[in-house]
Length: 385
Image 1 (tube, rainbow, N blue to C red):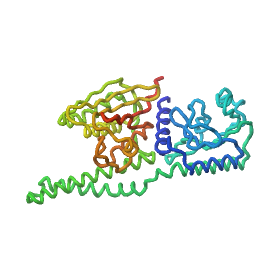
Image 2 (image 1 turned 45 degrees about the vertical axis):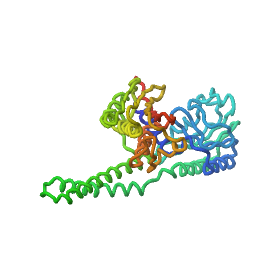
Image 3 (image 1 turned 30 degrees about the vertical axis):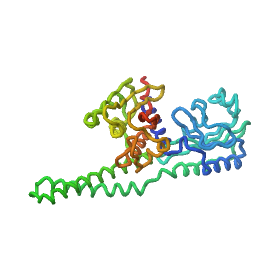
Image 4 (image 1 turned 120 degrees about the vertical axis):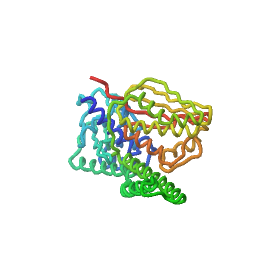
C-alpha cells in the first residue's frame, strides 16, 4: 500500500511539473484572480498555492509576503486530498493545525478555505485559498464563488499544456510513414528483383529519410503526451546503477571511437520509475555529452542519494553552454552549436518531459568553460514496510 500511495504521489508531482507553472515569475493573469478572491471573499490573504514534493510554492500571493513554505506546515497539502472545498473555521480548534507555526506565529492563520485545482490529467496540484486572522465561515454563496475562481486558475494552469493538433498530426502520420518505410526497405532488399544502381541509391536515401520521419513523429507524440501529463509509464522499483550502466553501454562504442573516457561512481540508489524511459533519458544526456566533448576527455556520471530524491550528474569537458542559452535548450526545436545540444532539436525537450512525468527535474547545473553538468533528480522508491 505504501508503494501504491507513493506511485500516486509521484504521478501527482509529475502533473505539477507538467503544467510548467512551478517556479515561474509572477504573472498578472494569476494575480488578478487572487486580488478578486481577496476582495470578493473579504479575506486579508489570498493565494494560488502549488503543492510540490516537499514544499508549497505560491504562484500568486496577495496579502502575504512569502514565496513558499515547507509542505509540513501546509494547509493546502491537506486540501488536495479531496476535490471539494476544505474549510477550517478555527485552526486553533482543529487538531491538524493547532500547533502549526503559521497558526501560532506569523501570519497567525485562524481561518482557511481552499478549493483544489486540477491539472489536465485530473491530478490535484494545489489550491486557490483564502486566509484570515480571525475565525469565520464561508457562506454558501462564497463557497460557490471560491470554486468558480479556482476553475479560472485551472484554466490558466492548463493554458500552456494543449498540443492536440500536434498529437493528431503525429498519430495520423505515423501509420502511413511506417508503411512507406517498410515498402522501401523491401524494395532495397532485392526480394522483388535487383534495381539499377542509381535507383537503389535513391531508395536507400528515401528509406533513411522516412525512418527519420517515423522517429520524429514518435518524438512529437512523446513530447505532447508528457506535456499533457498522460505519458504512459510502467512504474517499478529501479536501481540507478543498472540504468546508468545500460545508458553507458549504449554510447560506449561512439565514445571509444571519439577518444572519450566514460566513468561512473556513487551509490546504487533505488527510485520509482520506468526503467526503459530512464535509460532513454540518460542515454540522451550521454550522447549529447559525447557530441560536445573532444578527444582525450572524460565524461563522468555521478549518482547521489538525498533524503527524498536521488540525483544523477552527467559532467563533460566540452566547451560549455553560454549562460544566456541555458533557459532555451530544453525548448522544442532549439539547436545550439556548442554544449552538446545538436541533432533533431527535440532530444532535451523530450528528456525533460519524461523526467517531469516521473515527478522529477533535469537542469543544467554547471556551465563553466571547462564543461557542462546536467543534473537529473528523481523521487526515491518508497520505504519498505
